[in-house]
Length: 364
Image 1 (spheres, one colour):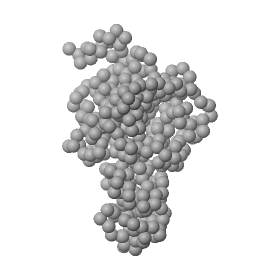
Image 2 (cartoon, one colour):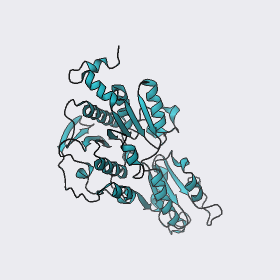
Image 3 (spheres, rainbow, N blue to C red):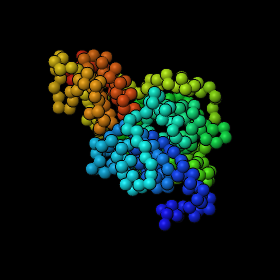
Image 4 (cartoon, one colour):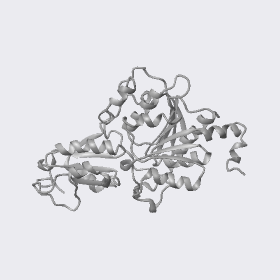
């Protein structure tokens, strides 16, 4: 008896639809709150080849929503661990693991291998980047997102006169303008629902059954148990910031576009290091630098060491850096943001010499 028996008997699907699933190649960007349920249902449905992209490691704070993982997986790489769990459940699945974050230097060579992309990322730089790449390469993109108690799903770059992400968000928001779930909170069931809906759209798109969510965005409100749709109209072909070709895409700086590095005051740095979960405040000065700041809540990791190996920061969602004057921490923040696009990286304005540093008058 085939494990696909119950779906093959559906007249709209049948053996032909199951064969289409078997031949499909789907790339899932992010093995997090959206990616975990999407991966589970894509494998269960019999999608032939699934790529899993994630450069992060599993943290304890992930476990309320990233339901493939448990306590024994804390500290392990997400992409590889997800693939091992899914392979044990569905040994006939072909899972391709990419244990790194995407950027506009490596994404094009990866996308060309797949039929469609499911975006489970949680930051605007990645969303704009993957949208632009998929649009230029004419690859369907299934986007999901959550905010507090509401989630949304849509399909870009598919169907007649298709829309893309820049038709919804023409201008990238400034850093911090829309906070992530580490600041606003999230019930794990919400990304579970939205990720499952993303998988459903992928299955519909592959098999041709039903009506795909193209040029429409579906919203779900958990508190009211309500669904509603909003039509999306194509904007100008000359969208602000959209690269004109693949060469322009490869040369585009998406970190600067979305304002992903930001200076913060000492007051905020100290408050966030205490109040935000999964946060670390790092003194990146080299050994022997004066003045000395010796506090239990400050980690000392020299910049030179972090430039060689920053893997020790993978378990944190919020990384706050400071140096003597703020110059080196600004440069390192950009470097770390390139290494960890999914994380929030800050540089303390003015560094240890700033008048409000803990060596001076700030209340701590």
